[in-house]
View 1 (cartoon, helix red, strand yellow):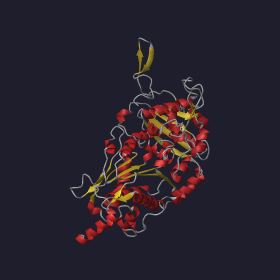
View 2 (tube, helix red, strand yellow):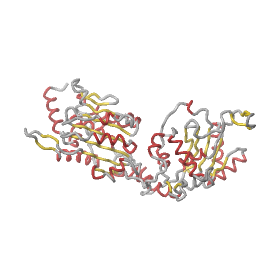
View 3 (cartoon, rainbow, N blue to C red):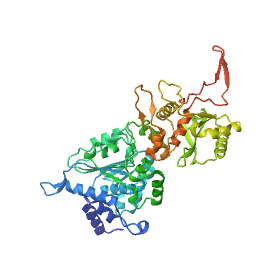
View 4 (cartoon, rainbow, N blue to C red):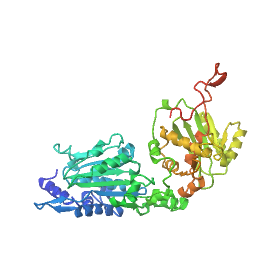
Length: 503
């Protein structure tokens, strides 16, 4: 049990770090001991970032008529675009614990791109560092908040982890704390909708209030508010890029492999390693928001079990590409296999046939470009597989330049209508890659696949495997046929299958 003198000393120490986040972090944790035996404190960008916030706070303070320090500066707004594994989750935790422990009745909100990110990655990091914090007994830190252990302060001295909801922005709009301190943190902020940014901005107007707004994220979108922090609204933010090659936490061997495989200037390497935005233009065909909402979405089997299963194969172009096998049933898409290119068509055909049997697929579509060999072997196995040429005429030639544009358009509509895709980062990058090519006749035309590969560093085979599931209408093989006497024709009991049915 700490003595009263020890507690008084701790209170004075914490107060001394009010405008010194870096000093606070260096003092508050058992560096070099136990869990932190191999760590001596923030280094590189982490230390610079914390120190920069401290300098800004000190520059914005002045003394009132009674000689007391008050904050009269503007809101401090920091943006970090980072590669993977650079330690930003730890920085978020340090900011939370510094903010709440050095200013009585601090209030704040932490949010992230998804509820899953917030509850399984961002906030657990806060609880970890709270456990190691020298003043942890001052605060209670359950699964969705941290607040003062003193019952008289717990409602007003707290920081909450709140999933964002564009239809319910009150948690952000109503957060004011006049004359005290407010902390806003957006983690993986590139996928947080604009209305949340807008209402948060409206909450940064309190006079003589320390307002710190820090946003972090992988720069996956070449548009949106995170992108604006580094471009059109740069003058209102202090933006920084963090390269994973300079991080002691990142796997440098893997980074070297990516550099050799994709190239240092590929979009893949730019986003995942260098922490800079991709080269995708403003004509992105499928919005990042639609992809983000579909990523990892779960639905009950009753929402898709009635629909036919459509199996697809997108064969690899060259040695750097993948062979991808996917399956869509109604509003749910699964990636069944993704493996390196090989020239053994028999192996690929055998694997495709096995999956067709295991899944009891109702149709199998193969990309004609590099799948003719597999298709021919399938014929020898008495398989009723169908070759699909991406460059052939669309079903609606007045609207689409070719079959590829038509299939990708249906994929986009399916995503918007509730489609579910795996939590696969590469698939999401590929879905957001194609740009729309402007035409005088207004037909939909997509950027050439070879140009996408040049930008990304790899071919969008995972996304093409999904698009292939929309090649043509399919009905379940076991769907009973019945005669409709009035029209004298046969049809399935539920009609020909519409790929958007149930979406």
